[in-house]
Length: 347
Image 1 (cartoon, rainbow, N blue to C red):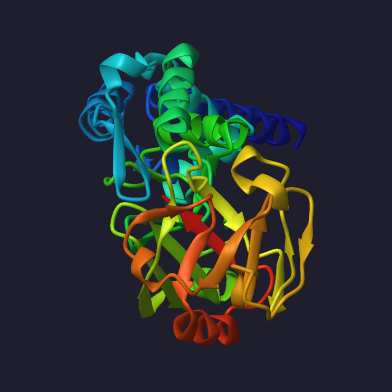
Image 2 (cartoon, helix red, strand yellow):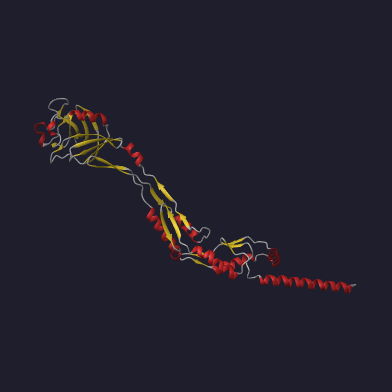
């Protein structure tokens, strides 16, 4: 009886040893084979030998990473070639890692998984090197090319014409955020397009083109060469009148001014100038024959203004002591249309 038990025990031991040897032999034969379900990036290398996995990675992973990466900022593209970025994929290390991930667990677990065809579902991050300096260069290039200050809408005067300078949105690039974004895209093979959309921060100007007419509800222009004063409302020409301007040596001042005050039948404070003669320093009441400021006054600066004149023949010439003369009937019409604060451009 004892002998039969001994025989059975020995037979069991032999069977276990045989099975263990088979399991070990099976596991050893698969030591260079990657378990099913293992991926490197997006490339499925499960079930492949190390040699086959390397070949597949060269074809599918490296070929994608060798395509230029394009940074797209608005309508402008900035390509970064793999050569400039010094892309280098460590295929040997990636495959070794894939084999290792597939062999996690005990020898029995690995054997059962191999026999039943179960998957590991493991992912290896591609081991890809690149030049940090190259990334910084392309980021700096994007920043320099795309950054611009906002442009305020404004007007400029050419003769009797008002020209509009259109506004423009300002742009800026967040270099600190863009750099890691480019680095991630360089080593990512999920998108054949290999493009990075650059976020552009927009800065609105204080005055846009649409708001310009509101900023300038009324504008006056003075064209000294052609002896005309022109009224614009909401940047559209309304009416133009003939004028007289200053004689040589007492020129009507050039530049941008504002209407600072208004008066009906204004008094005339005679300047203390040689041309004023005995009237110098006096104040001549408005509405009397000896007062040359007829009907209306639109003050500009330093005693210079727009006013009516009884000397109708002087209109269309250099005849005043610096002021802008108008026909009485014209200055009365203009007066009603021009509020204090109206910009006046004299050229």
